[in-house]
Amino acid sequence: MVLISQRIFLETIKKYCLAHAIAVEVRSGGWLVTMTKGNARRLAIGYDVGLNSAVAHQVANDKSACADVLASAGVPVIPHTLFLGAKLSKHIPGSDSLDAMQRLLEQHPQGLVIKPNEGTSGELVFRVTTRAQLETAVARVLAAHPSLAISPYVEIVDEVRVVLLDARALTVYGKARPSVTGDGIQSLRALAQASATAEQLKTITEDFDAAALDAVPPAGERLLLNWRHNLDAGAEPVLLADDAMREACVALAVKAAQAVGIRFASIDVVRTDGAWKILEVNTGVKMEALGRRHPALVEAAYSAALDEVFA
Image (cartoon, rainbow, N blue to C red; front, side, top):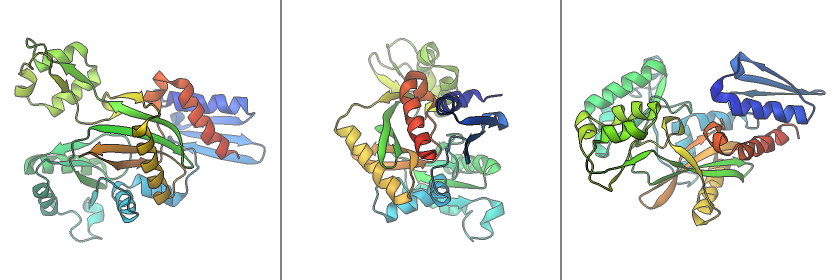
């Protein structure tokens, strides 16, 4: 059975292989793909087509290590601090210290973002502003993952994803968060229920308390329904025009890719406090949300990567 969330990725691979006389076999519910042409046998797993070295893949998949690599190379980046769960922390004393996490919280009164240190699913990402919230978030993440990363919460004005292949931008798009506009009559809850999806409504209940949801926004006031720019949480992809903003994001993404030594990746660039910084480097290039709006663009991007796979 093909995983629905991977349909665009898989269908593009199948179409490419058919056009290039490449035998293709899909296994593990769509997670593993084998592509064979003559004596050449190539694998794709998850959203990784196999162009990146093992080290580049590992660095990109490790949020704290990636942030350290970028910072050491002089690339502006949102810092991520590593903390380990019980199974690993015995090897590095203090790496599980809640007191150290609390000190980070005291240094950043706007709050912290807690997330798994590895992976790109966008799940188990929490913003915390109190010790109690911190302890709850840490417990939830470490119940499912061996380590976590903590970054300072920053007000992100824009988040842009740059899909790169060998320093060439294949596609560049922003992430527009869902929002509502007050009418002076309905509560935030009612406005959201009238326009948001079920997934967006779930996120709203996690991010707003009951008082905020029951408050009536003034007429004309625009309210964002999510602090995350996550496509799986309701943000929509919006292609960037060929302008200065696009050029700045691509230039920074190329520097990040070169610092990590990665060939094919999707790189998240954010604008905060008037400056562009790298948020994450993703070795698994997932473009399902973009593909629902611009399937030809996504097909062209994956095909360009597959051309390199079989070069």
